[in-house]
Image 1 (cartoon, one colour):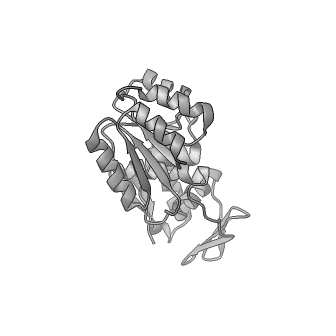
Image 2 (tube, rainbow, N blue to C red):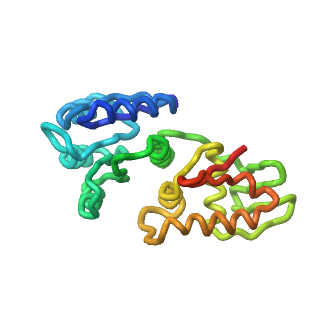
Length: 225
C-alpha cells in the first residue's frame, strides 16, 4: 500500500523476519528494531503508520517504549507478546496500546488486525461507494438498506455492519476476534460465538446469495467474489 510504513520491534530476529515477509507481501514498507532504544530512535526519525511492539526488549522494554510514544503520538500500536496473563494485557491497554496479540501468532491474522487499524487511522484510505452490488445482492450504504433480487430484507444493525465490512474486504479471511473488534468494538464483553450466530442469521436473510460468505474452518469468515 502506498505510503504505509510499519515499525517492527522485537528482540527475536526470526519473529521480525516472518512479520516483515508477510507485511511486504501485503505491500507495506517496514523498518526493524531489535531493542527499545533503537525503536525510539527510529520512531523519532520516521513517520510510521503503525507499530508492532514486543514487551520483552533489551535496553528499554516495550512498556516504556509504548509509554514514551504515547506521550507524543497516537500512532496505532499493536503489542505482540508471549506474556498472556490478563494483568499483562490490561497493562498494555493502560499504556495506550490499541491491540494485544499473543505469541505464537498467525501472520495472516496479525496482518488482518494491522489493516483494521490502518483503515481506522486513515493509513488505508478509500471512499465508500453509495451503492454496492454483487449479482442480485444490493447494498445501499447511505440508507443502510440491503436488497435481495430487488426485495428489501430486514437486517439487524450488526448483521448489516458484518455484511458491509466483509463485502468491503473481499477474498480476505478474518478471524472471529478481528470481526468482534471491528464490528462490536473492544468493549464488547460477549463470546466470539456471537459472530457465528450473526453470520448464520445473515446468511439466512440474504439467500440465495449466502454463498458469498464463506467459512474459513478453524479461523473465521471471508466474503468471496
